Amino acid sequence: MFSVIEKERRGDYLGKTVQVVPHVTDAIQEWIERVAQVPVDGKEGPADVCVIELGGTIGDIESMPFIEALGQFSYRVGPSNFCLVHVSLVPVLNVVGEQKTKPTQHSVRQLRGLGLIPNLLACRSSKELDENVKAKLSQFCHVP
Image (cartoon, rainbow, N blue to C red; front, side):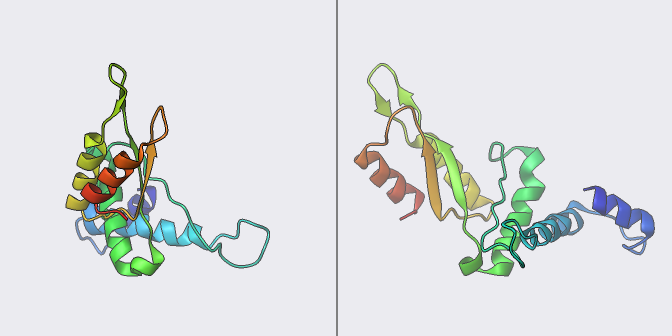
């Protein structure tokens, strides 16, 4: 965000109104591409993989510029250069020990509505996921 403010102060936007889309989302994408080029293993050149964590809860207003930026970025770089791993809690009802998939299904549905389609699900739970729960999540979240 600070880079956008600096650009505005320098006059890089030629007096145009600075907006979240495209100015902030473009700055986020530029940052991702910049950090992806930084060598991390002592070798020359960029890393093979760059992991970006977007934390928070889907739908929170604070994360919306980042979600939009990642949606644009995934479209721009293509599916062979972008993998979205959605981390979600699968709660266990203590009374019967049942693993509940609805929270994950709902968050994936919200992500899809915002233009991000998970390639993988990383599910947290107090016990190992049952096979039928994995199958249910796969089917209803459209993730193999």
